[in-house]
Amino acid sequence: MENLVVAGVDGSPESRRAAQWALAEASARRWPIWFATVRPPPQVADPRVEVAYHHSAWQAADPLFEELKAAAKDRGVPAHCKLLVGQASDVLVKLSAKAGLSVVGHRDRTGFPSRLGSVASALAAHAHCPTAVISFGQHPQPDPTGDRPAADMSRFAGQIVAAVEPGPSAAAVLSAAADMAQRHNRSLNPVTVDPATEGQPVLPDLLARLQAKHQGLRCSVHTLSGRPVHEITEAARDSWLLVVGTRGISGLPGLLRGSVSQALLQHVISPVLVVPDISSHEAG
Image (tube, rainbow, N blue to C red; front, side, top):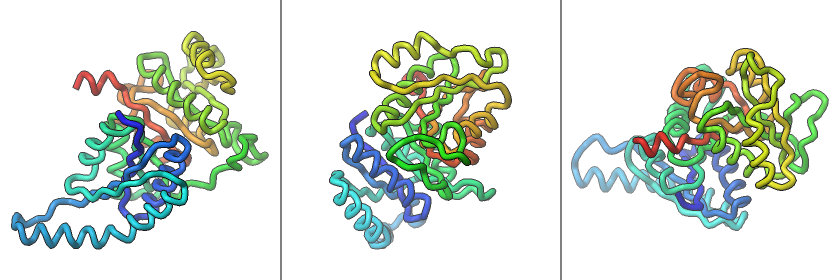
């Protein structure tokens, strides 16, 4: 993986919001950014049709690319625009092998999953690097200068929530969450859902190593009891970011491959950073 942000864009409102988030993160990391638009292949295997198809696709994408390049220039972020042909989810997963962060938009709470929404779900499940899924219809984030919650906001308003459980994915999830917390001066709240250990410390040794590495990290651990989707969604309400892994939460395998993942991506309004299980990619 390289120090590169890849953002999937298609001109829709959700992808524009994702592009804004991606640009801000690329600027914070001082990484370049690629904006990738993916078109399905032409239906006719004729060279003349293919040339006309690609020319038309570039004409359609050019205004969006110019807009995004101008926004990147304003932030001082090196930007490159790519128009690719194929199945969007497959192409973006392949690009993620070159990136340190992928970003994609997702339409939420409509009841009708959009094409981009299905791409977001597939990319979150199969990307080779962490993937940020940015919801359309997301509420405005709290004041970026601090993370003190307003009276009508949840207890984690403006903060980072990391959904974790004991297991091989916990270290990667917490490391990614801690990096984001320090980079953006946010408090970190590791959360797990397990009725058997409610109120007990979670992963104390791992958290101790994390705080030793990230000096000054503000970190508070929470163990909750209830249904994982409901508890994590409620914990992430008004948060600045939710960080999850591609393994299970509290014994539910395949978090980002089954109903639990789809529920979180559909119902969590805040941005969701999905951290891949590296061992599964190595095994594959």
